[in-house]
Amino acid sequence: MKKKIKAEITLILIPLILILFLGLPYIKKKYTIYCAIKAYNEFLDGKRSCANEDIFSLITPTREPERRYLTDYYIVDITGDGIPELYVQGHINIIFTFRDGDMRWLQIFYSSSAGSYHLLKNGMIVYNGYEKPEFGNYYRYFTLDNTGKEVDKLSFMWRDTNNNIAFDNDDTYEFNGEKCTMQEWFEKTKGYIYINEKGVDQLCNEADWIRYCEAK
Image 1: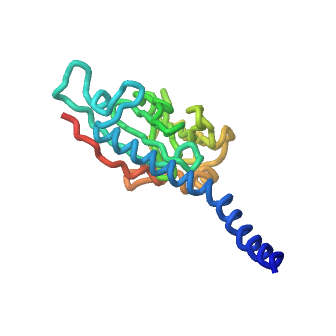
Image 2: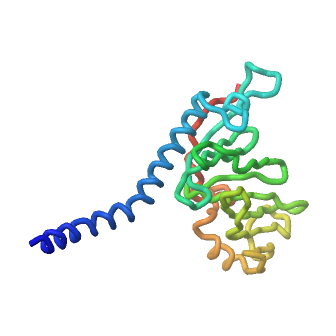
């Protein structure tokens, strides 16, 4: 009888132990996600700083306390570990991550006349460089690892070789460093860019930025 009871208890305990063992990583990740988003919201509310910087130091021009930079933000997983990052876009592009129970700086990007940085809804970052002296665009898609190092995914470019400010067969096209025809280029870049009604190439699936403050 005792052996039967022990066997029944064992049959009950084994599934419970397995559920607990398998469920702990899931619960831990969910809790980390909750803590990360909570920390980001506290930072945006001005109730938290990171590396001695707060949101007001990022949106306020130096020695002009009454002015503000136009600033947006977006929360998405950029490193691919399932824990979201906070991307703040203003006069500079700053990415925060959540590690060991606290916010940390992950990476900073500076857009310029040579090119600009963009964030997609899936967490991928795109550097859009401007071809010079000829007109054209260069796109490099990448993510970041947990140290902030860039992990390249793909790149492509178009150069207006004949200087008529239009896509045609006489221009130069490359995808991942290999030259291709205009038709091949448009086929390969489908889903990454599109051509608007003015004939200008635009990024697909850009992040739906949340406005933090207007410029003043």
